[in-house]
Image (cartoon, rainbow, N blue to C red; front, side, top):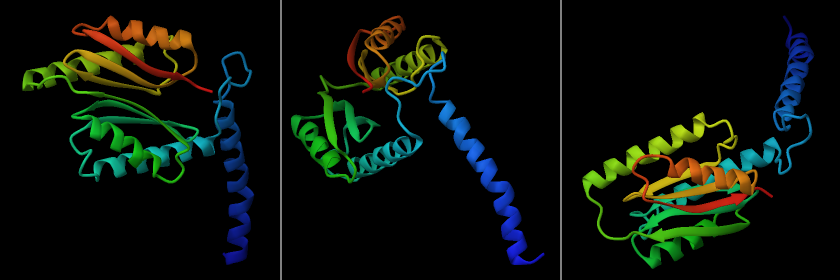
Length: 194
């Protein structure tokens, strides 16, 4: 088969399939009633946000000042939300500066908190179990439609961060987290998508 004929066949079949796939994906961005989601983003923006999140993670992990911090990163439309725990105020301040320096970042919302006291191995295991329990509860909950919620736990203190569809969903996420055994308190760093 000649190269030109092969290219024509590929164009004839692949382009319609690609177009149909993109239309299906665009339909996934609709609310259940068929209307457009209120704070929707395009696939391109979501990909850009994923790239930004990856770049911020890499920048923070390679920075000597921040290495000991437990930082979670969520990105929406170029806005980076930092949450988790840091050893000192210098780490908190420097994390925001490093994130802001990443190409594509429009704004940084720094919700990092200082670690309180030392954490034992037992605390770390308990915190891992609590975090896993909260994530499982959120995945099983029919009202938690958003997967953009990060969970960080330290000595029973849970931080929820990320982007949700509404204040009602944020409130519900807090209630779900509080229902998990071992949770001492919940800090709400959730932001409503705009």
